[in-house]
Image (cartoon, rainbow, N blue to C red; front, side):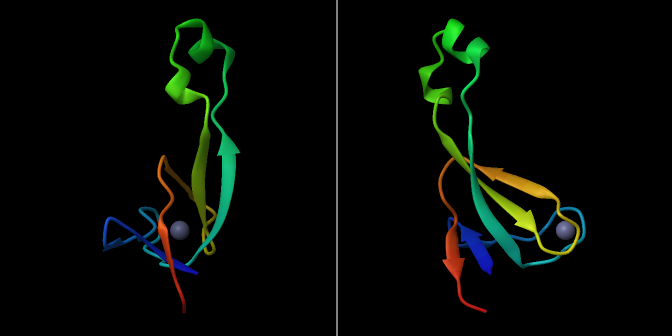
Length: 67
Ligand SMILES: [Zn+2]
């Protein structure tokens, strides 16, 4: 799947591939809670490059495109 963020196509910074697998990761950490950074206690969207497996992190979900 291809994705875009704010209208710009996302390209792997490592190998320039344009297809990714989407997944989610918790950003919870004890340190963030201790310092009152509650905004950090949420899910991030990650895109895993299908070619080199480089992971790109996003705080807002990128838009998916077919093909
Ligand atoms: Zn890549």
